[in-house]
Length: 309
Ligand code: G3H
Ligand code: 13P
Ligand code: ZN
Image 1 (cartoon, rainbow, N blue to C red):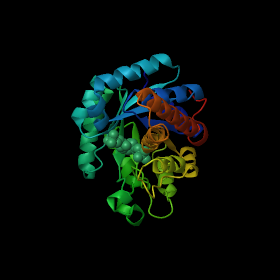
Image 2 (cartoon, protein in one colour; image 1 turned 60 degrees about the vertical axis):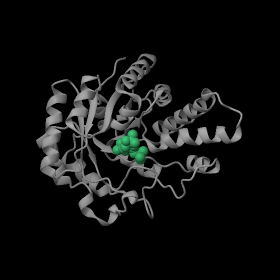
Image 3 (cartoon, helix red, strand yellow; image 1 turned 135 degrees about the vertical axis):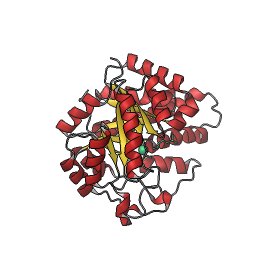
Image 4 (spheres, rainbow, N blue to C red; image 1 turned 45 degrees about the vertical axis):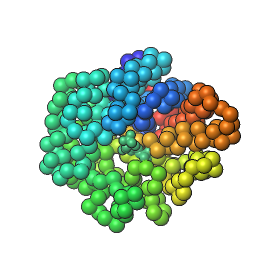
């Protein structure tokens, strides 16, 4: 199979009410772990790359390794730019064979967001590439903004409709209370499912994306902390809420933090338990296995995309 866009996978997800996992990649171990898990579950999957991942690994290395994963598997795989900061970065990814890009101009005012997004959509569509855009602010406790207290940070459903109509974007990331990183909620986790419902009512055919959707798996946080880490009080989005999001109209769920935790927890464990080990394959192999199990659990039990390839 070759790389695909997200068009067909999203159409099926909207019809059948489940979500597709979009997992961030930085190196070979992440790519292998994610695609092997998805392949075994017969699930479509999105591999996503941030601009800082491109800076770290290089766009050629990333695209060639993804190409290898596509050859080794038999499932639909999309290669997506995560949080594209500007037109030039989106263009570079499109020119290098990405099948999907996100332009994140959500920090600008509405009109500027529309203008920048439309510019990317025009270029992407003329190259057969789809575009995710973002409206609303994914604030969290790390920004010292309690998003639950500030309606202006959430996506406005009427604006979302106007935004999609004016930009022609293919999917839309909305803000309903999630945030990036390992510290998502000060008190109880809360997502605004009412906003999601209103958005789906107004733009039923637009796939909706949920960023900042790691569950910050307590077992992995504990494993990090028990083996010399220092990430106290980390808190993510509960699996029941993510499952509900998939059932109620979210088509793409973004996960980076949980895979970072999986890798770090195992590397720390091996270093602590086996101090004589200095073969990187020992600790990176353990990390890859943990990432694979983490992805498999999400695909099978939370996003419910298993068997949908
Ligand atoms: O949403 C952001 C992703 O977690 C990527 O983070 O820019 O550190 O690669 P990064
Ligand atoms: P997490 O930090 O919750 O994994 O979110 C990742 C993300 O949204 C990538 O775009
Ligand atoms: Zn994100």
